Length: 228
Image (cartoon, rainbow, N blue to C red):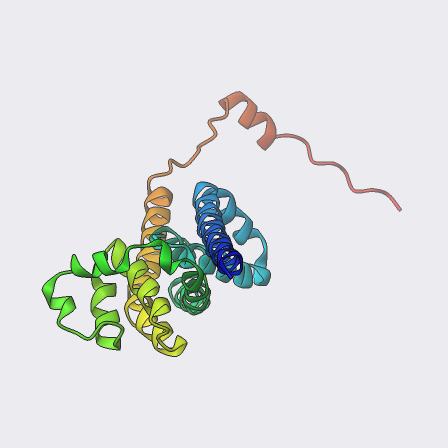
């Protein structure tokens, strides 16, 4: 009997250890993918600008990968999409990418939420956030307003408490979509301003020709018409 109980404890411990390893791998992989996209942002931007219509699904995929990673910062990508696609289409790309990111981030958090000390982190939150019921839409919205850890913690809490996926998605998009839309408009405006400045301050090239050479070209004999 004791041997059977010992085996059961070993199986449970092994299962817990394997889930922790799996969660750590998922956590690390999401970080690596996000870091790679940010590290090679220039190359990604150049690739997207050359692909034409195919750049839209790729831009959405890139944005979703980065935005779904814990503690990720998508400001640069939101601005980049505004520069490449313009304010309207850039905002649409950002919005679709955020929806996919919300779904992917929720799935990742289901595997990794136990890695974070959620109870201690909740206790450290401002009182105006803790006044709402933990896991409620109002709580998630208030938590996502906090820059930095707020968005990641909201996703982890939503996954740990099994908040419905739809609630998680719309609370995330309610905060992130307006911000990313403003960043896309800002990126388009900055790119236009920079382009206008460069054009207006680029010196025009004037070719100065020696007067004798100019006279030679102006007074050169014209070729006689061909005889039939």
